[in-house]
Length: 108
Length: 120
Image 1 (cartoon, helix red, strand yellow):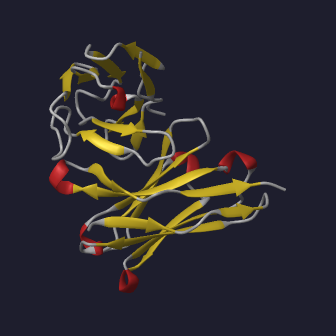
Image 2: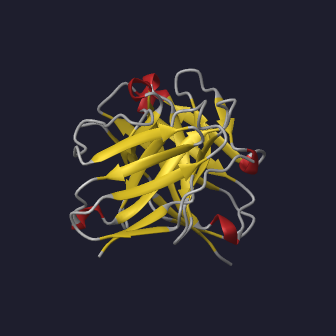
Image 3: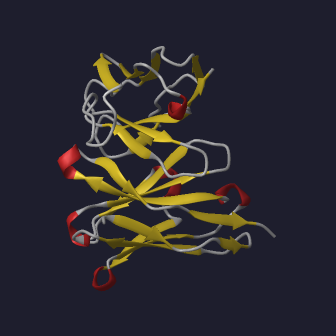
């Protein structure tokens, strides 16, 4: 079955830039999405269509794509950004959706 | 406001079935697909499948085919996910999520989650 690969953890100091990657063979063909999840809460969409930001999401969140890797970038990280982040996409046929394993962002 | 409200926590014995509901409000229920996603404690998100509330068409992840059924009642704007032959590994929080076509099929609205515990 198709898989998306994320690093388990990323740590940054406040004000620095955090980059979280997500790799998958079908990413050149399928859009990627990013979700933020804080403890005890449902996920929240922060990026769609690889790099688009929904209304209400701060400008410090951005996304990019290059080949089989997509990247979520958080510029000027704030303490409130500490959370788990999941990428999501679909297999090459678009039939089956899939989530990455998640990355825990720690703000030091 | 647009929201999805799920049914309450469930405790089931191994081998039993569970049916979780997801009531939509603030938008036209039949205009947006509903997907189901689960999350075991301390683990990641796992996609289970989708349902089109207008047609009733469904698609399930291979892992759950034969054990999951997604249905709806359009008169009360409610989607359902039933999982059968439960085992301990099915203990998880189950979420419903709306698919937003205007956001290129992103999951833009999520329910609050329903804890399902499978224990003898």
